[in-house]
Image (cartoon, rainbow, N blue to C red):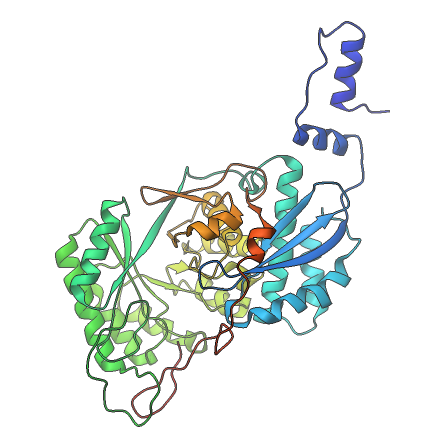
Length: 444
């Protein structure tokens, strides 16, 4: 009969072979129990934690096991349809998973994925992400290791990030970018407001509203392209060659305009242009690749392998930047990163305010373990968020540093979370509409 390390050392101590019986950490005790053949933990309960600490709805899944004190958290944040994720978890995935062991993460992911019959929807994927990430957190807590250790260990010490520099006018953007550069950021995304119109990623600039046939927010594609390209010219001139510039096109242009924009941005030596096309227009990436060498990042709205596979395998993009919970969690995102590595595509996971700190920790973990890491989007955590999510990744000199505690390294204060409930809003967390001057609604 095999004997555990702890029992062996105790017997040695009792026989006088050791002067004092050693003391064990909780993680070592757990490892010893596994060594002695103790049964794997089973899922005892699954709950959903909802909060809005910074004006954005966050959703986290908590899995509690039948072993005292062993649980895990996973990000399931789908801000625009947040109220649908909780019932997807509690009414569908929870009954399916209660009593199952937590040690078969891949099997659980695949069986949950198949259980809905129709696959790759954003509600299911976010619910599934919460389960998947919570299981990885449990696994790390069992092992007494950060999840990055379970995924092969670090490829780098910390994670290079880009900050969001924006403003209503050019000089505001330049000043904001210089502020981030002074803080140590080497990569800056720049966005400028459009006078009298609804731009993206920046405060609106006061100005005369364009003549429009409706009363909704207006976006003029041709004007926006000229103004954004002028912004890139000014930023490159004023900020110098050392800073890496990024810009989000946010899918608002026609495919032909997107090709033109990427071509005309070449002189400004972009780090990348983000989301020049919508997921419905993927075929036009071939035209961009054939016509210019501006690096392209894509994937924020992806939730299906049918979207990212061709762009990666045909080498039509330079950076893949899916939203982890939208793609189904840590497990599928890890596979995306590995696939992308073989085709020279680097990672740039989506990291805005509508990702919970648990999701940010999963992002940073993938950044640390992926050889083909490119850059990480950074959004600061306010004090209220950090009071709820204790152990957030830390920003130092433009680098994200992971919490070295087991699992994701994050604990959630559920009492504090309850003090920041979802607030009422006209669109219940969803996006409003933006239209062309003639009234045509456009993608956002």
